[in-house]
Amino acid sequence: MVVTRFAPSPTGYLHIGGLRTALFSYLWARRHNGKFLLRIEDTDKARNSQEAAEAIVNAFHWLGLEHDGEILYQSQRDEIYAKYINQLLEEGKAYRCYMSKDELSELRETQSANKERTKYDGKYRDFKGIPPEGVAPAIRIKAPLNGEIVVRDGVKGDIVFRAEDILDDFVIARADGSPTYNFVVAVDDHLMGVTEVIRGDDHLSNTPKQILIYEALGFDMPNFHHVPMIHNSEGKKLSKRDGATDVMVYKEMGYTPEALLNFLVRLGWSHGDQEIFSMDEMRELFDPKNINKSASIYNTEKLDWLNSHYIKNTPNSDLAKLLEQYGLLLASHDKKEILLDAIKERAKTLKEMASLVYEIISTPTYYEQTAVEKALKGNALEILNVFGAKVSAAKELHLPSDYHHLMQEVVDEMGIGFGKIGQPLRVALLGKMSGPGLDSVMAIIGRDETMLRIANAIAKHS
RNA sequence: GGCCCCGUCGUCUAGCGGUAAGGAUCCAUGGUUUUCAUCCAUGUUACAGGAGUUCAAUUCUCCUCGGGGUCACCA
Image (cartoon, rainbow, N blue to C red; front, side):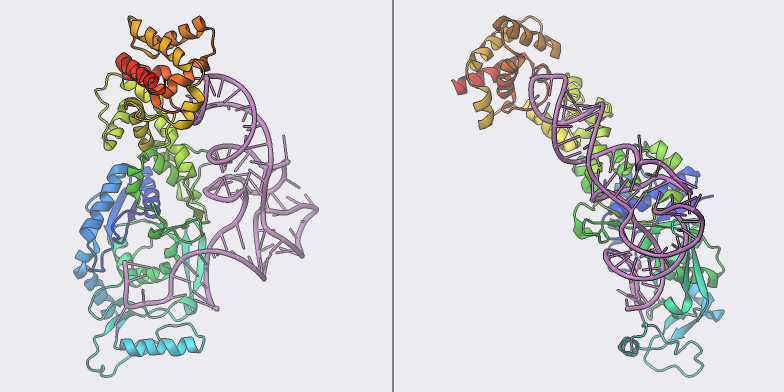
């Protein structure tokens, strides 16, 4: 059974980088019919974990990523951690350290003054004497003084660390008894049955420490996959200050879950030349062995392309639903199909789509100056007048083709090009020079509104 | 600074000793369209540098340079 997990520390919202590792973990679990677990790393009690968890679950829900089982909160597992800490203490694999904070920082200062690596000096490692009074002890693990620790990483390969380069007897429980990060991660990953740890490669240097915990506690080692960072345009680790890193703002901006997930899955991962992946394809094809080794720069150009691709290929009934978040209730609109067909190929986002809808259904209140100058000159108003009369006189006017025929008639009868009627008509209907096909616009707004807009334009520009 | 990771078009990437170094996006141009967008076609742009190994290196090794990450009683 493949078990993966996503273990965010509660920062309030789901971050774009976090989402990608979550997606990778989710996909790998789903591909194997395994489990994708969620754990909130809220051992820092000052933060409100409940809200953070909700924000994350909301985002997952929007994206259609469902986690398995109950959410696990580290803040509620103190007794469990205490048990394992005691075990290590009893087995002599950990010990109480009575070094005060002042003494510790003093030690570090002299070490860095001597250009040495700052590390705990092991003063209480084999301490047998009487502990100093007034110092609550922290618990440290007995780390190996030499030898190698190798991280077998599914993305980066085997990475060898030398104990004397990176290790010291690091703290696994603070003076107040609370366990530290590297300790609880190892304990929880084991207890949750996690078999594949997929996380950012900023955790690579934590991994030897966690391996130590695994070994001390006699746990089986999971497989590690450290995925490279996502960088901002400055080449630095993507952070909250980089803007638009909250996954949910992509919903507001009008991106679809399919597009966002497709975009993210291709950031640092690939499957040959394939660019478009349905959710099913992702679940079928994702494999961490194809994750890149190098960091990628966050750049949303491709997201826009993907989003417009998905919009074009989304059924109108679904689009109508998606547009509800912008206050558009199109489900029962009788010209819904014509309307959505007219704009779905023109918008990069749902938000843009919504404003295109408003542009069409609203009677223009002003006309762009340059458009008026370009289009409403010569006999343009006369042409509009002729066309208006035809609209008024026509028997049946429903489909875009009905309106198109009327335009064709005017063109034929007056011996003019299509542009001669198209341009002024467009300005009359929309107040500007660009937009969807005019026949569609008129079919959507109907005969009366069409005549009204033509009359308005003529009145205003005579 | 120590340790670790990384280095192919601007960006996302394919490549896994022999390729005219491919795709996508972006950008530009042309076509389609009454307009804009879409769509189609075409085009510009990349193996960080230097030594090896080899008949042959973008692919393997080493060095340099560059970028990033991490070094807590934070997570």
